[in-house]
Amino acid sequence: MSTTDRRPRRRLTGPLVSAPLALATGAVLVAAGAPAAQARAAATIVVAKDGSGNYSTVQAAVDAVPANNTSAVTISVKPGTYRETVKIPSNKPHIRLVSTTSSKNDVTIVYNNASGTPKPGGGTYGTSGSATFAVEADDFQARNLQFVNDFNEANTSITDKQAVALRTAGDKIVLDNIGALGDQDTLLLDSASKDKVGRVYVNNAWIQGNVDFIFGRASAVIAKSTIRLVKRYDGSSAGYVAAPSTAAGKHGFLIINSNVTGDVSDRSHYLGRPWHAGGDASLDPQAIVRNTSLSAAVRTTPWTDMSGFSWKDDRFAEYKNTGAGSGSASTDRPQLSDSQAADYEIADWLGDWTP
Image (tube, rainbow, N blue to C red):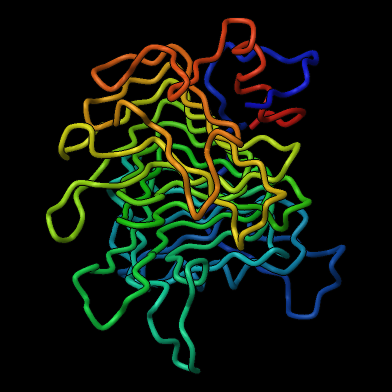
């Protein structure tokens, strides 16, 4: 297992929250064709299914944000279920997507595309293209709502059943008090490319799935969250929590102060396995699970190989986990020492960024 270089770090003593966002009551948008330097989004755009907002769909609100906007815009979503796919392109940074309530269950953005779902123009969506909600821009925040992919894996006409609820591919992404619900490949935390950093801070989330349902190459912190294991469509219990595809020299996944649980069979789920996307041997997948409660659903040997790549050649370890699924150090269960753990904290992942 490789380690990160020791360097000075900030210590975080409280919850990471951004400055309060001022809410406006209307939306004033820049006219089409305005120069990029003048691209200023409305302070707030309101989405409501009943027509009481500026738009009735989330994608319409995203479309209303001018390209290359230079200031933050809040898309405030009233309670309801929004059955649509949404994409925030890379030229629309600084978007804050928030519910008008404090409960993540009051606003649901949901769709049911899978990797093998046929596209209207031919071909299939593929795993990343199946996402209900996709974020390709930097400096995105989502708070108090949930993203769902409700594709039914019992659908025998589709063989590629990966179905993403939320995909991120930007840097400086905050997901606070959100839900990400699905089965296989629920939450794709990625970066724009292998050579770019995609930092993601997930706090107080509910993440649900069964196979590789937290995956990608982002440098992601998952803190104070519930990671819920669910059974397969046929009622069986088997799967993997994390499938990092971290580039060499970058941070992967840090799961900290969280809870791994679910109504599944004991010793049925691995904590993770190394995803060398496309068979890329240069990748160095990393997953660290620390100070987290592990239910009996976690296997006694919590890491496993993937597609011919051994987890022991990559970076997988635990530190001071508790619960029936935790275990002592062994060759099959690496544990960080106290001195090593000092280099595996939230500040090490986020660097010079304070969410």
